[in-house]
Image 1 (cartoon, rainbow, N blue to C red):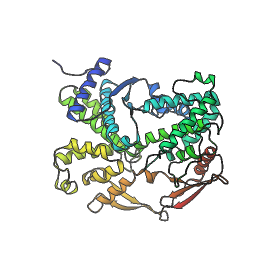
Image 2: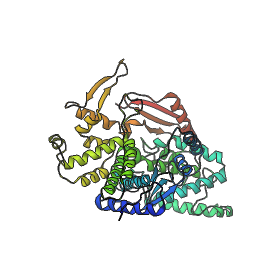
Image 3: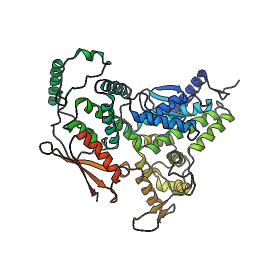
Image 4: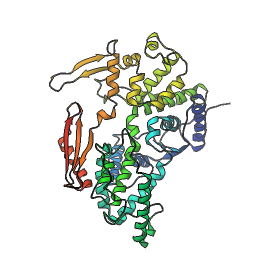
Length: 495
Protein backbone atom coordinates (compact mmCIF):
# COMPACT_ATOMS: atom_id res chain seq x y z
CA UNK A 1 0.00 0.00 0.00
CA UNK A 2 1.41 3.40 -1.00
CA UNK A 3 2.10 5.96 1.73
CA UNK A 4 2.68 8.77 -0.78
CA UNK A 5 1.02 12.06 0.13
CA UNK A 6 0.61 12.80 -3.58
CA UNK A 7 1.82 11.37 -6.86
CA UNK A 8 0.66 13.93 -9.42
CA UNK A 9 1.99 17.41 -10.18
CA UNK A 10 -1.47 18.92 -10.02
CA UNK A 11 -2.63 19.85 -6.54
CA UNK A 12 -6.06 19.75 -4.94
CA UNK A 13 -7.24 20.70 -1.47
CA UNK A 14 -7.31 17.16 -0.03
CA UNK A 15 -3.66 16.73 -1.13
CA UNK A 16 -2.77 20.11 0.41
CA UNK A 17 -4.42 19.04 3.65
CA UNK A 18 -2.56 15.71 3.76
CA UNK A 19 0.76 17.39 3.04
CA UNK A 20 0.18 20.14 5.61
CA UNK A 21 -0.60 17.63 8.37
CA UNK A 22 2.47 15.54 7.56
CA UNK A 23 4.71 18.63 7.48
CA UNK A 24 3.21 19.90 10.72
CA UNK A 25 3.90 16.59 12.46
CA UNK A 26 7.57 16.69 11.45
CA UNK A 27 7.97 20.39 12.30
CA UNK A 28 6.48 20.06 15.78
CA UNK A 29 7.82 16.64 16.77
CA UNK A 30 11.14 16.21 14.94
CA UNK A 31 12.31 19.82 14.77
CA UNK A 32 10.48 20.98 17.94
CA UNK A 33 9.34 24.22 16.31
CA UNK A 34 7.15 26.71 18.18
CA UNK A 35 4.72 28.44 15.83
CA UNK A 36 1.70 30.71 15.60
CA UNK A 37 -1.54 29.12 14.32
CA UNK A 38 -1.39 28.81 10.54
CA UNK A 39 -3.71 30.17 7.86
CA UNK A 40 -2.97 28.93 4.32
CA UNK A 41 -4.44 30.77 1.33
CA UNK A 42 -3.97 29.92 -2.36
CA UNK A 43 -4.00 33.01 -4.59
CA UNK A 44 -3.70 33.82 -8.30
CA UNK A 45 -0.74 35.45 -10.00
CA UNK A 46 -2.62 38.77 -10.15
CA UNK A 47 -3.35 38.59 -6.42
CA UNK A 48 0.32 37.82 -5.80
CA UNK A 49 1.29 40.90 -7.83
CA UNK A 50 -1.19 42.94 -5.82
CA UNK A 51 0.39 41.66 -2.62
CA UNK A 52 3.84 42.67 -3.95
CA UNK A 53 2.69 46.20 -4.60
CA UNK A 54 1.20 46.80 -1.14
CA UNK A 55 4.23 45.89 0.97
CA UNK A 56 3.09 42.23 1.03
CA UNK A 57 0.38 43.04 3.57
CA UNK A 58 -3.12 41.51 3.45
CA UNK A 59 -4.77 44.89 4.14
CA UNK A 60 -3.38 48.26 3.13
CA UNK A 61 -4.58 51.82 2.67
CA UNK A 62 -4.70 53.27 -0.84
CA UNK A 63 -1.73 55.15 -2.28
CA UNK A 64 -0.68 55.88 -5.83
CA UNK A 65 2.76 54.29 -5.36
CA UNK A 66 1.19 50.87 -4.81
CA UNK A 67 -0.64 51.11 -8.14
CA UNK A 68 2.53 52.25 -9.89
CA UNK A 69 4.47 49.30 -8.49
CA UNK A 70 1.68 46.90 -9.47
CA UNK A 71 1.72 48.14 -13.07
CA UNK A 72 5.49 47.79 -13.27
CA UNK A 73 5.61 44.31 -11.75
CA UNK A 74 2.73 43.10 -13.91
CA UNK A 75 4.39 44.39 -17.10
CA UNK A 76 7.69 42.70 -16.17
CA UNK A 77 5.91 39.44 -15.32
CA UNK A 78 3.75 39.34 -18.47
CA UNK A 79 6.80 40.08 -20.63
CA UNK A 80 8.74 37.24 -19.04
CA UNK A 81 11.44 39.45 -17.51
CA UNK A 82 10.68 38.48 -13.92
CA UNK A 83 9.07 35.59 -12.08
CA UNK A 84 6.72 35.58 -9.12
CA UNK A 85 7.63 34.41 -5.65
CA UNK A 86 6.34 30.98 -4.74
CA UNK A 87 4.85 32.38 -1.54
CA UNK A 88 4.37 35.39 0.72
CA UNK A 89 4.16 35.04 4.49
CA UNK A 90 2.77 37.56 6.98
CA UNK A 91 4.14 38.03 10.51
CA UNK A 92 0.77 37.80 12.22
CA UNK A 93 -1.22 35.50 14.46
CA UNK A 94 -2.58 33.50 12.74
CA UNK A 95 0.47 33.42 10.47
CA UNK A 96 -0.89 33.90 6.93
CA UNK A 97 0.93 32.11 4.09
CA UNK A 98 -0.06 32.85 0.49
CA UNK A 99 0.63 30.03 -1.97
CA UNK A 100 0.65 30.69 -5.72
CA UNK A 101 -2.02 28.63 -7.45
CA UNK A 102 0.35 27.95 -10.37
CA UNK A 103 2.72 25.95 -8.13
CA UNK A 104 2.96 22.20 -8.52
CA UNK A 105 1.98 20.01 -5.58
CA UNK A 106 5.64 19.49 -4.71
CA UNK A 107 6.20 23.24 -4.60
CA UNK A 108 3.10 23.74 -2.49
CA UNK A 109 4.53 21.29 0.06
CA UNK A 110 7.91 23.01 -0.06
CA UNK A 111 6.54 26.51 0.49
CA UNK A 112 4.26 25.35 3.31
CA UNK A 113 7.33 23.94 5.05
CA UNK A 114 9.32 27.09 4.24
CA UNK A 115 6.74 29.74 5.17
CA UNK A 116 4.14 28.20 7.46
CA UNK A 117 6.75 26.58 9.68
CA UNK A 118 10.23 28.03 9.01
CA UNK A 119 9.33 31.72 8.83
CA UNK A 120 6.50 31.22 11.30
CA UNK A 121 8.84 29.84 13.99
CA UNK A 122 11.34 32.64 13.39
CA UNK A 123 8.67 35.36 13.61
CA UNK A 124 7.34 34.00 16.88
CA UNK A 125 10.64 33.38 18.64
CA UNK A 126 13.27 35.88 17.49
CA UNK A 127 13.82 38.58 20.12
CA UNK A 128 13.59 41.49 17.65
CA UNK A 129 10.13 40.46 16.47
CA UNK A 130 9.01 39.81 20.04
CA UNK A 131 10.26 43.24 21.12
CA UNK A 132 9.12 45.41 18.21
CA UNK A 133 6.07 43.74 16.63
CA UNK A 134 2.62 42.64 17.78
CA UNK A 135 1.62 39.64 15.68
CA UNK A 136 -1.74 39.36 17.43
CA UNK A 137 -2.70 42.96 16.71
CA UNK A 138 -1.27 43.77 13.27
CA UNK A 139 -4.29 42.61 11.22
CA UNK A 140 -6.73 44.65 13.30
CA UNK A 141 -4.42 47.67 13.07
CA UNK A 142 -4.16 47.35 9.27
CA UNK A 143 -7.95 47.22 9.05
CA UNK A 144 -8.15 50.39 11.16
CA UNK A 145 -5.49 52.13 9.04
CA UNK A 146 -7.28 51.30 5.79
CA UNK A 147 -10.61 52.62 7.11
CA UNK A 148 -9.05 55.70 8.65
CA UNK A 149 -7.20 56.77 5.51
CA UNK A 150 -10.32 56.16 3.42
CA UNK A 151 -12.35 58.32 5.81
CA UNK A 152 -9.77 61.10 5.58
CA UNK A 153 -9.83 60.94 1.77
CA UNK A 154 -13.61 61.26 1.86
CA UNK A 155 -13.49 64.36 4.10
CA UNK A 156 -10.33 66.17 2.99
CA UNK A 157 -9.80 64.92 -0.55
CA UNK A 158 -7.39 62.41 -2.00
CA UNK A 159 -4.76 64.99 -2.93
CA UNK A 160 -4.48 66.25 0.67
CA UNK A 161 -4.13 62.73 2.08
CA UNK A 162 -1.68 61.56 -0.57
CA UNK A 163 0.53 64.59 0.03
CA UNK A 164 0.88 63.62 3.70
CA UNK A 165 1.46 59.95 2.81
CA UNK A 166 4.09 60.95 0.23
CA UNK A 167 6.05 62.82 2.88
CA UNK A 168 5.59 60.10 5.50
CA UNK A 169 6.74 57.37 3.07
CA UNK A 170 9.83 59.41 2.19
CA UNK A 171 10.80 59.37 5.89
CA UNK A 172 9.97 55.73 6.73
CA UNK A 173 13.63 54.76 7.17
CA UNK A 174 13.95 57.58 9.70
CA UNK A 175 10.63 56.72 11.32
CA UNK A 176 11.67 53.90 13.65
CA UNK A 177 12.93 53.56 17.19
CA UNK A 178 16.17 51.61 16.95
CA UNK A 179 17.26 51.43 20.56
CA UNK A 180 14.28 52.34 22.75
CA UNK A 181 10.52 52.26 22.90
CA UNK A 182 8.59 55.52 22.46
CA UNK A 183 8.14 57.47 25.69
CA UNK A 184 4.80 57.02 27.40
CA UNK A 185 2.91 59.98 28.88
CA UNK A 186 2.23 60.03 32.61
CA UNK A 187 -1.06 58.62 33.91
CA UNK A 188 -2.23 62.08 34.94
CA UNK A 189 -1.51 63.52 31.50
CA UNK A 190 -3.31 60.62 29.81
CA UNK A 191 -6.41 61.09 31.98
CA UNK A 192 -6.41 64.83 31.30
CA UNK A 193 -6.25 64.19 27.55
CA UNK A 194 -9.15 61.73 27.82
CA UNK A 195 -11.27 64.30 29.66
CA UNK A 196 -10.38 67.01 27.11
CA UNK A 197 -11.16 64.70 24.20
CA UNK A 198 -14.54 63.73 25.68
CA UNK A 199 -15.41 67.42 26.07
CA UNK A 200 -14.23 68.19 22.54
CA UNK A 201 -16.28 65.36 21.03
CA UNK A 202 -19.39 66.51 22.90
CA UNK A 203 -18.97 70.09 21.67
CA UNK A 204 -18.15 69.20 18.05
CA UNK A 205 -20.57 66.29 17.52
CA UNK A 206 -21.72 66.04 13.91
CA UNK A 207 -24.53 63.70 12.81
CA UNK A 208 -22.75 63.10 9.48
CA UNK A 209 -19.93 61.21 11.21
CA UNK A 210 -22.36 58.41 12.10
CA UNK A 211 -21.74 57.10 8.56
CA UNK A 212 -18.07 56.37 9.31
CA UNK A 213 -16.99 52.69 9.44
CA UNK A 214 -17.00 51.19 12.91
CA UNK A 215 -13.86 51.92 14.88
CA UNK A 216 -12.81 55.02 12.91
CA UNK A 217 -12.53 58.32 14.75
CA UNK A 218 -13.65 61.53 13.02
CA UNK A 219 -10.65 63.77 12.25
CA UNK A 220 -10.35 67.24 13.71
CA UNK A 221 -11.42 70.19 11.57
CA UNK A 222 -8.70 72.72 12.43
CA UNK A 223 -5.15 72.50 13.78
CA UNK A 224 -6.25 73.75 17.18
CA UNK A 225 -9.68 72.15 17.58
CA UNK A 226 -8.54 68.83 18.98
CA UNK A 227 -6.84 68.41 22.37
CA UNK A 228 -4.61 65.80 20.75
CA UNK A 229 -3.04 68.67 18.82
CA UNK A 230 -0.85 69.37 21.82
CA UNK A 231 2.55 69.92 20.28
CA UNK A 232 3.96 71.96 23.12
CA UNK A 233 5.10 69.04 25.26
CA UNK A 234 8.66 68.51 26.36
CA UNK A 235 11.04 67.86 23.49
CA UNK A 236 14.12 65.73 24.05
CA UNK A 237 17.15 66.07 21.82
CA UNK A 238 18.61 64.42 19.91
CA UNK A 239 15.63 62.43 18.59
CA UNK A 240 16.36 59.55 16.22
CA UNK A 241 12.74 58.96 15.13
CA UNK A 242 11.97 61.91 12.86
CA UNK A 243 8.41 60.80 12.08
CA UNK A 244 7.66 60.47 15.78
CA UNK A 245 9.05 63.96 16.47
CA UNK A 246 7.01 65.51 13.67
CA UNK A 247 3.88 63.65 14.75
CA UNK A 248 4.19 64.91 18.33
CA UNK A 249 5.67 68.39 17.90
CA UNK A 250 4.92 69.80 14.43
CA UNK A 251 3.24 73.22 14.90
CA UNK A 252 1.26 72.91 11.65
CA UNK A 253 -0.17 69.39 11.46
CA UNK A 254 -3.84 68.72 12.10
CA UNK A 255 -5.07 65.77 14.15
CA UNK A 256 -5.84 63.53 11.15
CA UNK A 257 -2.40 64.26 9.70
CA UNK A 258 -0.72 63.27 12.97
CA UNK A 259 -2.70 60.02 12.98
CA UNK A 260 -1.63 59.35 9.39
CA UNK A 261 2.02 59.82 10.38
CA UNK A 262 1.47 57.47 13.30
CA UNK A 263 0.09 54.80 10.93
CA UNK A 264 3.12 55.01 8.63
CA UNK A 265 5.48 55.07 11.61
CA UNK A 266 3.91 51.94 13.09
CA UNK A 267 4.27 50.14 9.75
CA UNK A 268 7.92 51.18 9.53
CA UNK A 269 8.51 49.81 13.02
CA UNK A 270 6.75 46.56 12.07
CA UNK A 271 9.17 46.00 9.18
CA UNK A 272 12.27 47.10 11.09
CA UNK A 273 13.18 43.62 12.48
CA UNK A 274 12.96 42.12 8.99
CA UNK A 275 15.68 44.48 7.79
CA UNK A 276 18.02 43.15 10.50
CA UNK A 277 17.31 39.44 10.04
CA UNK A 278 17.21 38.76 6.29
CA UNK A 279 20.02 36.17 6.39
CA UNK A 280 18.72 34.46 9.52
CA UNK A 281 15.04 34.53 8.55
CA UNK A 282 15.55 33.12 5.07
CA UNK A 283 18.26 30.76 6.31
CA UNK A 284 15.93 29.41 8.99
CA UNK A 285 13.07 28.88 6.52
CA UNK A 286 15.36 27.27 3.93
CA UNK A 287 16.93 24.96 6.51
CA UNK A 288 13.48 23.94 7.81
CA UNK A 289 12.03 23.19 4.38
CA UNK A 290 15.19 21.27 3.39
CA UNK A 291 15.00 19.14 6.55
CA UNK A 292 11.25 18.51 6.27
CA UNK A 293 11.28 17.58 2.58
CA UNK A 294 14.16 15.15 3.11
CA UNK A 295 12.37 13.54 6.06
CA UNK A 296 9.23 13.16 3.93
CA UNK A 297 11.28 11.35 1.30
CA UNK A 298 13.08 9.17 3.84
CA UNK A 299 9.70 8.08 5.23
CA UNK A 300 8.33 7.24 1.80
CA UNK A 301 5.81 10.09 1.75
CA UNK A 302 7.07 11.74 -1.47
CA UNK A 303 8.60 10.01 -4.50
CA UNK A 304 11.90 10.47 -6.34
CA UNK A 305 10.33 12.84 -8.86
CA UNK A 306 9.15 15.18 -6.10
CA UNK A 307 12.55 15.00 -4.40
CA UNK A 308 14.35 15.97 -7.62
CA UNK A 309 11.90 18.82 -8.26
CA UNK A 310 12.41 20.07 -4.72
CA UNK A 311 16.21 19.83 -4.96
CA UNK A 312 16.21 21.70 -8.28
CA UNK A 313 14.26 24.58 -6.75
CA UNK A 314 16.22 24.55 -3.50
CA UNK A 315 19.66 24.62 -5.14
CA UNK A 316 18.54 27.48 -7.39
CA UNK A 317 17.46 29.50 -4.35
CA UNK A 318 20.68 28.93 -2.35
CA UNK A 319 23.03 29.32 -5.32
CA UNK A 320 25.88 31.79 -4.74
CA UNK A 321 27.59 33.10 -7.92
CA UNK A 322 31.32 33.82 -7.79
CA UNK A 323 32.36 37.47 -7.50
CA UNK A 324 33.45 37.55 -11.18
CA UNK A 325 30.26 35.86 -12.43
CA UNK A 326 27.92 38.04 -14.51
CA UNK A 327 25.08 36.94 -12.22
CA UNK A 328 26.83 38.15 -9.06
CA UNK A 329 24.89 40.82 -7.17
CA UNK A 330 26.31 40.37 -3.68
CA UNK A 331 26.05 37.75 -0.97
CA UNK A 332 22.85 35.72 -1.42
CA UNK A 333 21.13 35.78 2.01
CA UNK A 334 19.52 32.40 1.30
CA UNK A 335 22.90 30.87 0.50
CA UNK A 336 24.71 32.34 3.51
CA UNK A 337 21.89 31.65 5.97
CA UNK A 338 21.28 28.08 4.83
CA UNK A 339 25.02 27.38 4.64
CA UNK A 340 25.62 28.61 8.20
CA UNK A 341 22.73 26.64 9.66
CA UNK A 342 23.72 23.46 7.86
CA UNK A 343 27.27 24.04 9.12
CA UNK A 344 26.03 24.43 12.72
CA UNK A 345 24.35 21.03 12.45
CA UNK A 346 27.62 19.54 11.17
CA UNK A 347 29.64 21.12 13.99
CA UNK A 348 27.21 19.81 16.61
CA UNK A 349 27.26 16.25 15.24
CA UNK A 350 30.57 15.73 13.38
CA UNK A 351 33.06 18.38 14.55
CA UNK A 352 36.70 18.66 13.52
CA UNK A 353 39.50 19.78 15.82
CA UNK A 354 39.24 23.21 14.20
CA UNK A 355 35.53 23.33 15.05
CA UNK A 356 36.25 22.42 18.67
CA UNK A 357 38.72 25.28 18.91
CA UNK A 358 36.32 27.83 17.44
CA UNK A 359 33.03 26.61 18.95
CA UNK A 360 33.76 24.82 22.23
CA UNK A 361 30.29 25.60 23.60
CA UNK A 362 28.43 23.29 21.23
CA UNK A 363 30.91 21.39 19.01
CA UNK A 364 30.07 17.70 19.29
CA UNK A 365 27.19 18.07 21.74
CA UNK A 366 24.77 16.41 19.31
CA UNK A 367 21.95 18.86 20.07
CA UNK A 368 21.89 20.71 16.78
CA UNK A 369 18.18 21.46 17.11
CA UNK A 370 18.77 23.20 20.45
CA UNK A 371 21.74 25.19 19.12
CA UNK A 372 19.78 26.39 16.08
CA UNK A 373 16.69 27.31 18.09
CA UNK A 374 18.85 29.30 20.51
CA UNK A 375 20.49 31.15 17.59
CA UNK A 376 17.16 31.83 15.88
CA UNK A 377 15.78 33.29 19.10
CA UNK A 378 18.68 35.42 20.35
CA UNK A 379 20.63 36.84 17.39
CA UNK A 380 20.26 39.14 14.41
CA UNK A 381 22.26 38.92 11.17
CA UNK A 382 25.24 40.94 12.39
CA UNK A 383 25.72 39.10 15.69
CA UNK A 384 24.83 35.71 14.18
CA UNK A 385 27.60 35.98 11.58
CA UNK A 386 30.04 37.33 14.17
CA UNK A 387 29.43 34.34 16.46
CA UNK A 388 28.73 31.38 14.16
CA UNK A 389 30.53 31.81 10.82
CA UNK A 390 33.13 29.02 10.73
CA UNK A 391 36.52 28.85 8.97
CA UNK A 392 35.23 25.91 6.91
CA UNK A 393 32.32 27.94 5.55
CA UNK A 394 34.61 30.87 4.79
CA UNK A 395 36.76 28.49 2.76
CA UNK A 396 33.70 27.01 1.03
CA UNK A 397 32.49 30.49 0.03
CA UNK A 398 36.06 31.65 -0.71
CA UNK A 399 35.47 34.87 1.19
CA UNK A 400 37.97 37.71 1.06
CA UNK A 401 37.80 41.39 1.92
CA UNK A 402 38.73 44.46 -0.07
CA UNK A 403 40.17 47.66 1.36
CA UNK A 404 39.09 50.76 -0.50
CA UNK A 405 40.46 54.23 0.13
CA UNK A 406 39.02 57.13 -1.82
CA UNK A 407 42.41 58.55 -2.83
CA UNK A 408 43.88 55.23 -4.00
CA UNK A 409 43.68 54.16 -7.61
CA UNK A 410 43.15 50.47 -6.89
CA UNK A 411 41.55 48.13 -4.36
CA UNK A 412 43.66 46.18 -1.91
CA UNK A 413 42.88 42.65 -0.73
CA UNK A 414 43.14 43.08 3.04
CA UNK A 415 42.22 39.56 4.21
CA UNK A 416 41.45 36.14 2.73
CA UNK A 417 40.09 32.81 4.00
CA UNK A 418 43.24 31.63 5.77
CA UNK A 419 44.47 31.35 9.35
CA UNK A 420 45.41 35.00 9.66
CA UNK A 421 42.34 36.31 7.85
CA UNK A 422 39.41 34.32 9.29
CA UNK A 423 38.52 36.66 12.12
CA UNK A 424 39.00 39.78 10.03
CA UNK A 425 36.83 38.46 7.19
CA UNK A 426 34.13 37.39 9.64
CA UNK A 427 34.16 40.75 11.38
CA UNK A 428 33.96 42.75 8.15
CA UNK A 429 31.18 40.57 6.74
CA UNK A 430 29.19 40.99 9.94
CA UNK A 431 29.55 44.80 9.69
CA UNK A 432 27.85 44.71 6.28
CA UNK A 433 24.65 43.62 8.01
CA UNK A 434 24.74 46.37 10.63
CA UNK A 435 21.71 48.49 9.75
CA UNK A 436 23.15 51.52 11.54
CA UNK A 437 26.06 51.57 9.07
CA UNK A 438 23.90 51.09 5.98
CA UNK A 439 21.37 53.82 6.66
CA UNK A 440 22.18 57.50 7.27
CA UNK A 441 22.22 58.51 10.93
CA UNK A 442 19.97 61.58 10.86
CA UNK A 443 18.54 62.98 14.08
CA UNK A 444 16.55 65.99 15.18
CA UNK A 445 19.12 68.27 16.81
CA UNK A 446 16.99 71.25 17.85
CA UNK A 447 13.68 73.00 17.25
CA UNK A 448 12.61 76.53 18.18
CA UNK A 449 8.86 76.54 18.82
CA UNK A 450 8.81 79.96 20.54
CA UNK A 451 10.86 81.90 18.00
CA UNK A 452 11.34 81.37 14.28
CA UNK A 453 10.23 77.70 14.56
CA UNK A 454 13.25 76.52 12.62
CA UNK A 455 13.95 72.78 12.80
CA UNK A 456 17.56 71.59 12.67
CA UNK A 457 18.51 68.03 11.65
CA UNK A 458 22.00 66.58 11.98
CA UNK A 459 23.55 63.89 9.81
CA UNK A 460 26.46 62.12 11.46
CA UNK A 461 28.45 60.90 8.49
CA UNK A 462 29.90 57.40 8.38
CA UNK A 463 33.45 57.42 6.98
CA UNK A 464 32.97 61.10 6.07
CA UNK A 465 30.46 60.24 3.32
CA UNK A 466 27.85 63.02 2.90
CA UNK A 467 24.28 62.60 1.73
CA UNK A 468 23.54 62.73 -1.99
CA UNK A 469 22.75 66.37 -2.73
CA UNK A 470 19.67 65.86 -4.92
CA UNK A 471 18.09 63.23 -2.66
CA UNK A 472 18.83 65.34 0.42
CA UNK A 473 16.94 68.34 -0.94
CA UNK A 474 13.97 66.24 -2.01
CA UNK A 475 13.63 64.60 1.40
CA UNK A 476 14.11 67.91 3.24
CA UNK A 477 11.20 69.30 1.22
CA UNK A 478 9.03 66.54 2.68
CA UNK A 479 10.23 67.39 6.20
CA UNK A 480 9.37 71.05 5.60
CA UNK A 481 5.89 70.08 4.41
CA UNK A 482 5.25 68.20 7.66
CA UNK A 483 6.96 70.75 9.92
CA UNK A 484 5.41 73.78 8.25
CA UNK A 485 8.48 76.03 8.69
CA UNK A 486 12.14 76.24 7.70
CA UNK A 487 14.25 73.12 8.10
CA UNK A 488 18.04 73.00 8.08
CA UNK A 489 20.45 70.06 8.02
CA UNK A 490 24.06 69.98 9.18
CA UNK A 491 26.55 67.22 8.45
CA UNK A 492 29.31 66.25 10.85
CA UNK A 493 31.78 63.39 10.94
CA UNK A 494 30.60 60.74 13.38
CA UNK A 495 34.14 60.39 14.73
